[in-house]
Image (cartoon, rainbow, N blue to C red; front, side, top):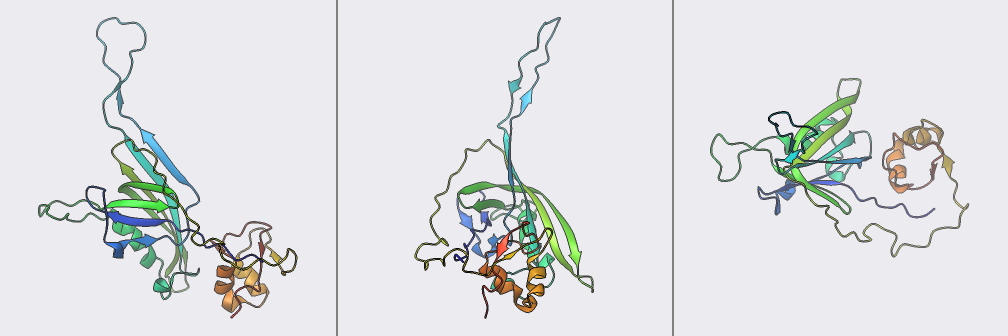
Length: 243
Protein backbone atom coordinates (compact mmCIF):
# COMPACT_ATOMS: atom_id res chain seq x y z
CA UNK A 1 0.00 0.00 0.00
CA UNK A 2 1.38 3.48 -0.84
CA UNK A 3 2.85 5.47 2.01
CA UNK A 4 0.07 7.65 3.56
CA UNK A 5 0.15 11.29 2.60
CA UNK A 6 1.04 13.70 5.39
CA UNK A 7 -1.82 16.15 4.97
CA UNK A 8 -1.05 19.83 5.40
CA UNK A 9 -2.92 21.20 8.42
CA UNK A 10 -4.57 24.60 8.59
CA UNK A 11 -3.12 26.99 11.18
CA UNK A 12 -4.20 30.03 13.18
CA UNK A 13 -1.42 32.55 13.85
CA UNK A 14 -1.41 35.82 15.76
CA UNK A 15 -0.40 39.04 13.96
CA UNK A 16 0.70 42.44 15.19
CA UNK A 17 -1.75 45.35 15.16
CA UNK A 18 -0.61 46.37 11.65
CA UNK A 19 -1.34 42.91 10.21
CA UNK A 20 2.29 42.84 9.06
CA UNK A 21 4.22 40.35 11.18
CA UNK A 22 3.40 37.11 12.96
CA UNK A 23 3.89 37.32 16.75
CA UNK A 24 3.51 35.10 19.85
CA UNK A 25 4.41 31.79 18.16
CA UNK A 26 3.46 30.01 21.39
CA UNK A 27 -0.19 30.88 20.64
CA UNK A 28 -0.11 29.61 17.06
CA UNK A 29 -2.14 26.44 16.64
CA UNK A 30 -2.67 23.71 14.07
CA UNK A 31 -6.20 22.45 13.71
CA UNK A 32 -6.95 18.83 14.61
CA UNK A 33 -9.12 18.27 11.51
CA UNK A 34 -9.03 20.47 8.43
CA UNK A 35 -12.28 22.30 7.58
CA UNK A 36 -14.42 20.80 4.84
CA UNK A 37 -15.14 24.18 3.21
CA UNK A 38 -13.97 27.78 3.36
CA UNK A 39 -16.56 30.47 2.63
CA UNK A 40 -15.17 33.85 1.53
CA UNK A 41 -17.62 36.76 1.30
CA UNK A 42 -16.98 40.18 -0.24
CA UNK A 43 -19.35 43.07 0.53
CA UNK A 44 -19.39 46.73 -0.52
CA UNK A 45 -21.22 49.46 1.35
CA UNK A 46 -23.70 50.94 -1.10
CA UNK A 47 -26.29 53.65 -0.49
CA UNK A 48 -29.37 54.55 -2.45
CA UNK A 49 -29.35 58.34 -2.95
CA UNK A 50 -32.49 60.14 -1.79
CA UNK A 51 -33.91 61.83 -4.87
CA UNK A 52 -35.89 65.04 -4.73
CA UNK A 53 -38.95 65.84 -6.74
CA UNK A 54 -40.67 63.63 -9.28
CA UNK A 55 -37.68 61.80 -10.76
CA UNK A 56 -38.32 58.87 -13.04
CA UNK A 57 -36.24 55.72 -13.24
CA UNK A 58 -34.05 54.04 -10.64
CA UNK A 59 -31.22 56.25 -9.33
CA UNK A 60 -27.80 54.64 -9.30
CA UNK A 61 -26.50 53.43 -5.98
CA UNK A 62 -23.37 55.06 -4.59
CA UNK A 63 -20.32 53.40 -3.06
CA UNK A 64 -19.95 54.89 0.43
CA UNK A 65 -17.47 52.60 2.19
CA UNK A 66 -14.31 50.56 1.82
CA UNK A 67 -16.15 47.26 1.88
CA UNK A 68 -15.56 44.09 3.90
CA UNK A 69 -13.98 40.68 3.27
CA UNK A 70 -15.14 37.80 5.49
CA UNK A 71 -14.00 34.20 5.93
CA UNK A 72 -16.28 31.60 7.56
CA UNK A 73 -15.34 28.03 8.41
CA UNK A 74 -16.02 25.18 10.83
CA UNK A 75 -13.44 23.21 12.81
CA UNK A 76 -13.84 19.86 14.59
CA UNK A 77 -12.08 18.64 17.73
CA UNK A 78 -12.24 15.15 19.26
CA UNK A 79 -10.15 14.00 22.23
CA UNK A 80 -10.78 10.33 21.36
CA UNK A 81 -9.07 10.76 17.97
CA UNK A 82 -5.29 10.87 17.40
CA UNK A 83 -3.78 14.13 18.70
CA UNK A 84 -0.37 15.80 18.62
CA UNK A 85 2.01 14.61 21.32
CA UNK A 86 1.63 17.90 23.22
CA UNK A 87 -2.12 17.25 23.61
CA UNK A 88 -1.92 13.48 24.15
CA UNK A 89 -3.15 13.65 27.76
CA UNK A 90 -6.09 16.00 27.08
CA UNK A 91 -9.43 14.39 28.08
CA UNK A 92 -11.76 17.43 27.87
CA UNK A 93 -12.29 18.86 24.39
CA UNK A 94 -12.53 22.40 25.77
CA UNK A 95 -8.77 22.20 26.45
CA UNK A 96 -8.39 22.12 22.67
CA UNK A 97 -11.09 24.63 21.69
CA UNK A 98 -9.82 27.24 24.16
CA UNK A 99 -6.84 27.68 21.84
CA UNK A 100 -9.28 28.95 19.21
CA UNK A 101 -11.21 31.09 21.70
CA UNK A 102 -7.96 32.94 22.47
CA UNK A 103 -8.31 34.73 19.14
CA UNK A 104 -11.70 36.25 19.94
CA UNK A 105 -10.80 37.34 23.48
CA UNK A 106 -10.06 41.10 23.66
CA UNK A 107 -6.81 42.10 25.30
CA UNK A 108 -4.99 45.34 25.99
CA UNK A 109 -2.71 46.19 23.07
CA UNK A 110 0.90 47.17 23.64
CA UNK A 111 1.02 50.88 24.36
CA UNK A 112 -2.76 51.15 24.58
CA UNK A 113 -4.76 52.87 27.28
CA UNK A 114 -5.88 51.03 30.41
CA UNK A 115 -9.50 50.77 29.21
CA UNK A 116 -8.73 49.89 25.59
CA UNK A 117 -9.17 46.22 24.67
CA UNK A 118 -9.24 44.68 21.19
CA UNK A 119 -9.15 41.08 19.95
CA UNK A 120 -5.84 40.01 18.41
CA UNK A 121 -5.25 40.17 14.68
CA UNK A 122 -5.25 36.68 13.21
CA UNK A 123 -3.92 34.89 10.14
CA UNK A 124 -5.56 31.72 8.84
CA UNK A 125 -3.17 29.69 6.66
CA UNK A 126 -3.85 26.45 4.83
CA UNK A 127 -1.59 25.40 1.98
CA UNK A 128 -1.68 28.18 -0.62
CA UNK A 129 -4.62 29.95 1.09
CA UNK A 130 -4.11 32.87 3.50
CA UNK A 131 -6.59 35.23 5.15
CA UNK A 132 -5.75 38.02 7.61
CA UNK A 133 -8.41 39.64 9.76
CA UNK A 134 -10.02 39.71 13.19
CA UNK A 135 -12.39 37.12 14.63
CA UNK A 136 -15.87 38.62 14.92
CA UNK A 137 -17.81 35.49 15.92
CA UNK A 138 -17.26 32.03 17.41
CA UNK A 139 -19.91 29.38 18.04
CA UNK A 140 -18.97 26.17 19.86
CA UNK A 141 -21.17 23.07 19.98
CA UNK A 142 -20.27 20.31 22.47
CA UNK A 143 -21.49 17.15 20.78
CA UNK A 144 -20.37 14.05 22.68
CA UNK A 145 -19.90 13.43 26.40
CA UNK A 146 -18.20 10.77 28.52
CA UNK A 147 -20.07 8.81 31.18
CA UNK A 148 -18.85 11.26 33.84
CA UNK A 149 -19.99 14.32 31.87
CA UNK A 150 -16.76 15.43 30.20
CA UNK A 151 -17.23 16.90 26.70
CA UNK A 152 -15.21 14.83 24.24
CA UNK A 153 -16.12 16.26 20.84
CA UNK A 154 -16.90 19.78 19.64
CA UNK A 155 -17.50 21.75 16.47
CA UNK A 156 -16.37 25.38 16.36
CA UNK A 157 -17.76 27.75 13.72
CA UNK A 158 -15.70 30.94 13.36
CA UNK A 159 -15.88 34.05 11.22
CA UNK A 160 -12.96 36.38 10.42
CA UNK A 161 -13.28 39.73 8.72
CA UNK A 162 -11.24 42.65 7.52
CA UNK A 163 -12.60 46.11 6.74
CA UNK A 164 -11.51 46.21 3.11
CA UNK A 165 -11.79 44.19 -0.06
CA UNK A 166 -8.59 42.14 -0.08
CA UNK A 167 -6.91 40.56 -3.06
CA UNK A 168 -6.42 36.81 -3.11
CA UNK A 169 -3.14 35.67 -1.56
CA UNK A 170 -1.48 32.67 -3.18
CA UNK A 171 1.22 31.14 -1.01
CA UNK A 172 3.85 28.84 -2.55
CA UNK A 173 3.45 25.19 -1.67
CA UNK A 174 6.19 22.59 -1.79
CA UNK A 175 6.41 18.85 -1.57
CA UNK A 176 6.73 18.68 2.22
CA UNK A 177 5.07 15.56 3.48
CA UNK A 178 4.73 14.20 -0.07
CA UNK A 179 6.03 11.03 -1.53
CA UNK A 180 9.38 12.37 -2.67
CA UNK A 181 12.15 10.00 -1.69
CA UNK A 182 9.73 7.37 -0.38
CA UNK A 183 10.18 3.69 -1.14
CA UNK A 184 8.30 2.31 -4.13
CA UNK A 185 4.72 1.29 -3.37
CA UNK A 186 3.81 -2.41 -3.44
CA UNK A 187 1.99 -3.71 -6.50
CA UNK A 188 -1.76 -3.28 -6.57
CA UNK A 189 -3.68 -6.11 -4.95
CA UNK A 190 -0.82 -7.32 -2.74
CA UNK A 191 -2.10 -5.69 0.44
CA UNK A 192 -5.16 -7.01 2.36
CA UNK A 193 -7.55 -4.08 2.28
CA UNK A 194 -10.84 -3.64 4.13
CA UNK A 195 -13.78 -1.81 2.55
CA UNK A 196 -15.67 0.51 4.88
CA UNK A 197 -19.44 -0.08 4.99
CA UNK A 198 -21.85 2.85 5.05
CA UNK A 199 -21.86 4.89 8.29
CA UNK A 200 -18.83 3.02 9.64
CA UNK A 201 -16.01 4.40 11.78
CA UNK A 202 -12.35 3.46 11.77
CA UNK A 203 -12.58 2.50 15.45
CA UNK A 204 -15.40 0.08 14.62
CA UNK A 205 -13.42 -1.55 11.81
CA UNK A 206 -10.39 -1.87 14.11
CA UNK A 207 -12.49 -3.48 16.87
CA UNK A 208 -13.89 -6.01 14.40
CA UNK A 209 -10.36 -7.08 13.42
CA UNK A 210 -8.88 -7.19 16.91
CA UNK A 211 -7.07 -3.86 16.75
CA UNK A 212 -9.35 -1.88 19.02
CA UNK A 213 -6.51 -1.13 21.44
CA UNK A 214 -4.20 0.10 18.67
CA UNK A 215 -6.58 1.78 16.23
CA UNK A 216 -4.83 5.18 16.49
CA UNK A 217 -1.58 3.94 14.94
CA UNK A 218 -3.50 2.15 12.19
CA UNK A 219 -5.50 5.31 11.43
CA UNK A 220 -2.31 7.38 11.27
CA UNK A 221 -0.63 4.85 8.95
CA UNK A 222 -3.65 5.01 6.61
CA UNK A 223 -3.66 8.81 6.58
CA UNK A 224 -7.18 8.92 8.04
CA UNK A 225 -8.16 12.56 8.59
CA UNK A 226 -11.29 11.88 10.68
CA UNK A 227 -11.72 8.33 12.06
CA UNK A 228 -15.40 8.97 12.77
CA UNK A 229 -16.31 9.88 9.18
CA UNK A 230 -15.15 7.19 6.76
CA UNK A 231 -16.45 7.39 3.20
CA UNK A 232 -18.68 4.50 2.12
CA UNK A 233 -16.50 1.98 0.27
CA UNK A 234 -13.22 3.54 1.43
CA UNK A 235 -10.35 1.02 1.38
CA UNK A 236 -8.07 0.83 4.43
CA UNK A 237 -5.18 -1.43 5.40
CA UNK A 238 -5.91 -2.74 8.86
CA UNK A 239 -2.41 -4.27 9.11
CA UNK A 240 -0.69 -0.89 8.68
CA UNK A 241 1.09 0.69 11.61
CA UNK A 242 1.42 -2.48 13.66
CA UNK A 243 3.83 -2.06 16.57
